[in-house]
Length: 279
Ligand SMILES: Nc1nc2c(ncn2[C@@H]2O[C@H](COP(=O)(O)OP(=O)(O)OP(=O)(O)O)[C@@H](O)[C@H]2O)c(=O)[nH]1
Ligand SMILES: [Mg+2]
Image (cartoon, rainbow, N blue to C red; front, side, top):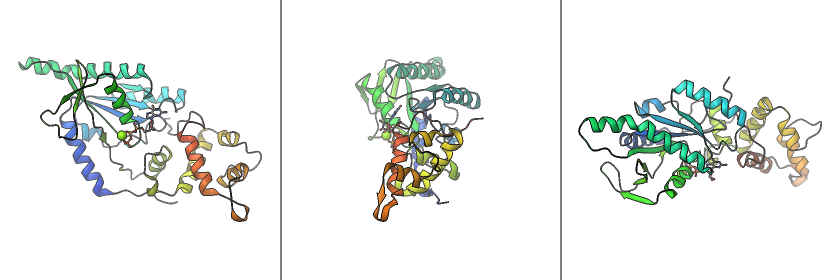
């Protein structure tokens, strides 16, 4: 099996930056991909966020298997003891849910400040998550709701700013990028499925082959039906032939086919699928 490669130097640097950001907020909004809630989570998150309250979002739930997402919400809640919401960055109702939860999670901290004789202030929060899970979409949507930058404050560098989302919440306008540290190649492949890993880190055909196998395991005949295969095996070659993606000599264009299969999944054309198992 072809391996997906990681860069340890980047990881240390990204973790350091993330820790600095985490230090200045009261509440963390952790974004996972609802199609792979386990594989898009960071095993070290608890060490990184320490005792800060955390809201977990299973985002892109418009692309995930609705029934399985319900089970995942319950499972992640039980496992982490954190509130968990299934979201879709385009849905305004989800944004309100996020704001309500953040206010609630931040309250103990504000109460503590007041008890110390300090003035109450808005809850400070930030969005963290792996690449491509929808962090910027969520931040932009929340900011659109407000429009007022509050400018630099102690602890915030020039390249990031607090935005007052409402009288009770200040949001850091820059997301915390969770570094890709997956010694587990199975998880790495799943991150590749959802386009969370740069394509130069892997071989598209190898990833598409594993993708087909995983979908076959979880949703038997799903790919066969989508690509209208009949009795032939569900393989990249047969899908390419069916679609007439051919290279010189009449051979199947497996590279183009692999890319197209992954694109069909990523865009939701293939349907609502969840590719992590939680049982
Ligand atoms: N269908 C769907 N697409 C989404 C959702 N959230 C984000 N996207 C899309 O997913 C892609 C990545 O979203 P971003 O918001 O850029 O993700 P990010 O986490 O900021 O990505 P990086 O900056 O690369 O780490 C974009 O094409 C978004 O339009 C969602 O809830 N549903
Ligand atoms: Mg982004």
